[in-house]
Length: 151
Image 1 (cartoon, one colour):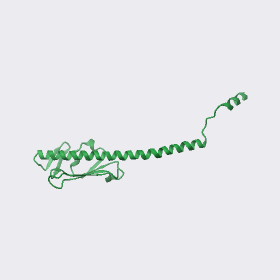
Image 2 (cartoon, rainbow, N blue to C red; image 1 turned 180 degrees about the vertical axis):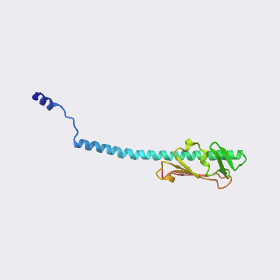
Image 3 (cartoon, rainbow, N blue to C red; image 1 turned 90 degrees about the horizontal axis):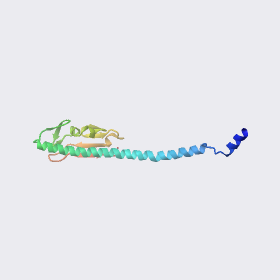
Image 4 (spheres, rainbow, N blue to C red; image 1 turned 90 degrees about the vertical axis):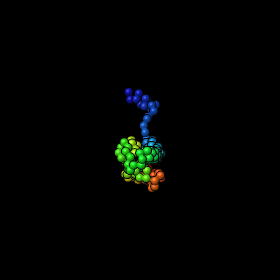
């Protein structure tokens, strides 16, 4: 019986990992991780930047809509929108109330305070944000600035 086992064992391939096989496998995984992680971070940053740009475009459209509403209503001090009353400055929404013009779904992921809509997931708070400044003069639209270097 020992003779049969030794004959069978001598010709059969042996499958096992050596230390070198394990080291090569770990090195390959490390290289893949080194490429995949920065790529993922770049995609995440680009996605945040796009979210900020989208909110800025929505804010611009909402401010111009509010201006049209203000004109149609005879230039009141405030206009009524679905989410509340918005004070008007020189015919455009005030910085304090401008976030009321946007839907809650547009503000998901953003923290709003006095004209600044900051992305909540940003690396550097106010450096990934939309800044709204009220109109300086009648007939002059508000300024909307983007900060993207902290996304």
